[in-house]
Amino acid sequence: MERKITRDTAILTAVSLVLQLFGLLLNIFITRKLGESEVGILSLISSFYCLALSLAGGNSFAYSSRFISEEIGGNGNCEKIMLYCLFFGISLSTVFSVVCFFLADSIAGYFDGYSSASTGIRIMALSLPLAVTGACVKGYFHARRKVSIPCISELIEFIAKAVVLVIFTQFILSKGYSDTLTAVAVSVIIGEVASCAYLCISYAASRNPTPDKTAVIPSFFGFVRAILPIVASAYSFVLLSGANEALVPITLMNFSGSSSTALGEYGIFEGIIMPVLYFPSVILQSLSCILIPEIARETSSKNIAKVRKISCDAISNGISVALLSASFIFTFGEEIAALTSDNPLVATALKTLCPVIPFIYLELILEGILKGLGKQNFSTLNSAAEYIIRISCVLIFVRLIGFYGIVVSYFASNIACNIARIFVVHKEIGLKFSLTDNILIPCLSVTAGIQLSLMIKGVVSFQGIFSLALTAFICVTVYFISTKLLRRFAD
Image (cartoon, rainbow, N blue to C red; front, side):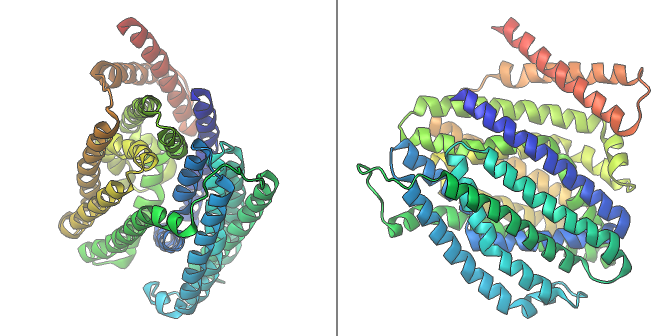
């Protein structure tokens, strides 16, 4: 079991690292070609599409991976559940696709200044059923522990989208022949078509149409009742996050008095700062995706000891990655910022946000555990509270102190709500937390890694990305060696 989790996490992490790295490079390319305000527009469009997709799918990946895993754990009929997932997801997404298509002119008012906004919205609306279908199939393969297929589909989708965006940026947008919204819309539908086609072909080749005749097959309406908390959680999350995303540039504009400055700061935050901050967390994002079906499977089999073991290991790994990442970003924040942007705000913001990184990263692990345990109601309420805190801070502090009001909102929301998540997970499965193993040893190992990397950095003559890559490699290597030795000594 542990080997499969490690293998799947390694595969997802490798793919996620590639996608995050090239996604960040794509944002840097667009920033340098078109300016920071265009990246702000790009971030707004991406937020709008994520909102529409979440409403259209109701978190189709989560309910497909979880309930198919439960069927596998309980020797049920996973193919029947997969058909339920597809039918529900495609039906819901088609409704939202039609609504977005016919209300495109009204929605376009949100993107003031883009004459072709309605065309772009209609193009993105057509992609919603494809995206939801793909998410269901990804959940199916995660549940069956075939994560390589979703990984390949994500690579196909990213390559298709990136090629279209680069072509638009290089040859079309810079010459004024089109606008950012249309470019994103075209890239989205081409990426979804390519990804969905690959996933559907893979599903047709992999499915087992022969049902287990002894399995008790739930009704479709029973399935819908079971997934309603997940759908409600997705709706709560996307509506509140959408409100937060919309308020940030508005409040920034109220503070600065300039829409260009506001979009520039918003673009820097969403397009550069947050991708850099989340970049080291790809291993935890991958692990979180694995945790949902694995914990759901073990919970269905009533194997609570195994659930506790998986959860404790995941949280311990999460703390290690978070402490190492926060220390590295704090120490080398100026160099990271210099590679990504000419704006001095990047380095200051990265270093300021470092103390909250452990809470941000642990949320990925804790949410995977909670969803696998079926604690969707708590997850929904806690996520809603998190965004209410964040929106409140944005409304209060951005108007007073500008950009750093966003930083305040991240501190307040992540610390408060992740403490609540830790408490509930501990209550449900009885976590055993070791101060020595989870705090003291990682802190000593991080210090050793950072100090040695700084010493070697002062000797070698590498500059730029090579210098940063070398120090990161040294820091990570020393950290894991030190951790292993110190834990052996502590035992």
